[in-house]
Length: 245
Figure (cartoon, rainbow, N blue to C red):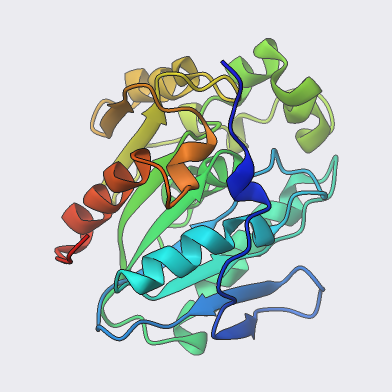
């Protein structure tokens, strides 16, 4: 099955503002406002931690969730091959300064896709962020060692970590998050096979795993796909929000 990638280059409504959490060019956040007072969605994009994939491909998701009533923050972060600590440091900093940038009194849900799902799982397991209501990991690279053995995206894991093994960055080896964790993965995903998420779920059975039948990798972040309804339904469950679709 070929992966449908149109969402990666589709035009979308631009964010209402951009926020900065540091001086580096990549330390920026796209912020979509919402008319309703709801928990924030803090989104971490994927792209196998590679520099060529930035937050722009997540703009259809950000705009769509905002239209449905959620304020959305899409976090950019440094993606420097061989320096994974730059990426994790940026996620840490962005979450730490969040209360200085926006109103977080309603709390927030951390959501990440693919490599962004990996970073979100890492953050929830190691940082215990204040006002985190839950985590939604979409087709996450949740087991780095397994993903490395599979050679995903032409050796993306080794390109990310440099060399060797980094269990301190590997969600499957980290403690379970205190906040609720929801895993959503398509059964026809050929980019990050669902077995990678199932490995995490076997290690952390308190998580909630939703297998989306007949869905591939990018459909989970595509507002035009049927699978996107599974994502918004889980977001509704975690935030207690209601909306009309």
